[in-house]
Length: 354
Image 1 (spheres, one colour):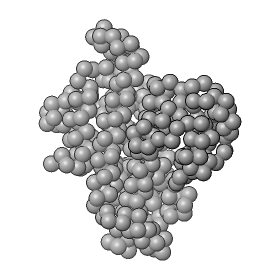
Image 2 (cartoon, rainbow, N blue to C red):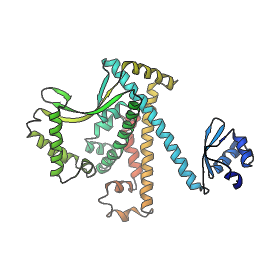
Image 3 (cartoon, rainbow, N blue to C red):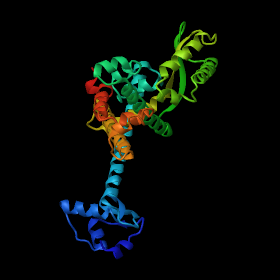
Image 4 (cartoon, rainbow, N blue to C red):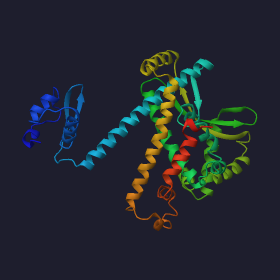
């Protein structure tokens, strides 16, 4: 690389095409694999965005990038692209869910819990919700220890929830939908309905008292310390004695999503145009496959990260040190990736639903 010519490159500069860029840098014009190798080498010196045939210079590096730095950059770009496709699929399926709901019920509002959305949007198979409160049966069925199953749910749940939250926020920003969270109660006399202000206030107070009685600061500690069953048992005891909640059997949070007929019809047409030859069933299948692969990819990254932290030393040495670290203990396990694959197939992959 001619360093004098490289210094003449400026951020924002637009160059007509590859051949002109070669002339500017006094580099040989190549084709095929030779051209690919040349472009890879240029990436060590500067970054660009290609718009059809032209090159827009984004950054010129002060120091030449190493092969390792380029690899990290490539992985980040692939991850960003994969996440972008995943989000597009998710937004399309949310709109399709709303439009289908309107067709079936003639209503312009959908109320679903986050776990109901996981299943409705094909992020998981039906086993995810079936076993989330019944890990002992799942343990027997797939021969994976209960502690690991708890780990699986605590790592996958927030990632999928965040993906849905981002998609909903974008759709709301585009004014395709409006949404908010609300509390639903299952009652003795009225069935399922939205909670009143008094009920929400009292549930809040009893949850606060439950945390205090357990000497915990927040719900996250309840989850991490695997004490959700204890939390629910203590809360239910409080609720049983509470007059305000005498009619309430259980409660949960839902997303209330509002849309409009005309917007729904326009979005439905846009979906058909974007999908082209792919029908909605294919998109559902692709999103499920993407989510399954994403979970396995993230698990490999987490394991590599924790192995690097402990310098790839024998993990048995750290068993006692990590006895209180629920997350790292699982990620350092020799059969961690195998258990992730088995569990993800059972709970996520639609092909292994039954």
